[in-house]
Image 1: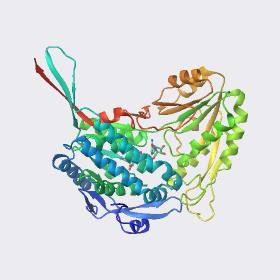
Image 2: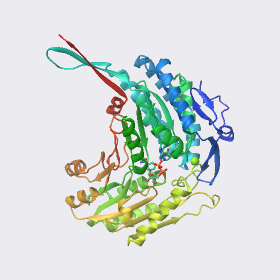
Image 3: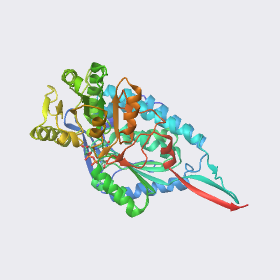
Length: 496
Ligand code: NAI
Ligand code: MG
């Protein structure tokens, strides 16, 4: 039971046969035989061909999840027994890290080292965290009342739908489904069409770990077909979505019609506020790292850099220096720091934003543009850009989702706070200063789900992470309260 199939598991073999849907523990072709391709954004070539599920396939997956909820024993298993299986799943993820990291790197374009250092192990750890938390969560809890005896009892919610984006496909599966599974739910996953591969491996690993067939189902396919069918399906009890606010609205509308809870994790326009007492070199390097992580396709990362006037020139020149030194290249090649963006569509979108930002009068400290990576002429590579100027510029306001930062200056604390809070997004920001009183004060005044101090992009297990306003609704992930979301709580009362 070590590697996914055997020690001879070859990624090339996995990719060479058309991949099927994963429903009820079986690998099944799409009902009408339809397929679609996922690309390797580093080469622009086809990476694999997959089944394109439709509404009928989603029906079959929801039915399999319902059957598993009612009959597989997963929902009624003592939490400690489920936790043993989820720990085994976490171990299998770690044991298969090389395979998962390679597939994730090829499908998304991200540097393989980043997938290996962060995406894969962090996902594994999320299963351990929620497995342990579920063991220490009371099934029954008394209410403090007089005249009656009353308690609440936690049940698993039922069949939970998950629709995931393409930026961190495997990591987000871990963040999303670990609490749902730990609470005893069964699930249907619709991965993004640009990056569907690791979800299929995940379903196989789950069953190898002992999760009963039908508990984890995966329907690959297009968002407008399979995604819409899942979001609108009357047979699901909850829906969780991570992606753009535009599609998030559609998911919320569908959930409203079906009267089910929706957990929406949407985009961001994160700011970093740098006061003039910071170590400028360190801060510049850290923020360049943050905005180019995953080619900038990170919803919470720092894309608006607010710098106090006194150190602005120094900061900009150090940031430009660090940004222009980044090694752009294929995700699987040694030394690559900045891989391609996920698709041609995303590349055009990012380049379009850079052009519109300049046309609106932004200063181009580093102009960005198409990157030429010699062996990979057809890959979707972009040079990082640093623009700056007015907070009204489109690049200061909208989510670009590429290696593009926008720098602005401020005079004092009050101005910095109001600049950050202009955004309609509310996911995450950071405050950089040696003065911890000021850091705390400012961090708590920024309207968003998360504030970080002297760092950006921190995701410790056990700390809630999620957005407000245009960045989402539904309580976020990674925290103890997320496990609660996946229980259906019932009150029981009897007179004394
Ligand atoms: P998207 O929101 O269209 O896709 C996310 C997921 O939703 C995918 O699985 C997709 O198949 C599915 N989907 C698409 N249409 C659907 C529908 N009608 N019903 C149900 N599911 C549907 O994201 P997209 O178009 O790939 O990226 C657009 C922009 O969204 C990005 O440039 C970025 O700004 C933002 N985004 C934010 C993410 C985040 O983590 N917050 C992740 C991905 C995108
Ligand atoms: Mg791909």
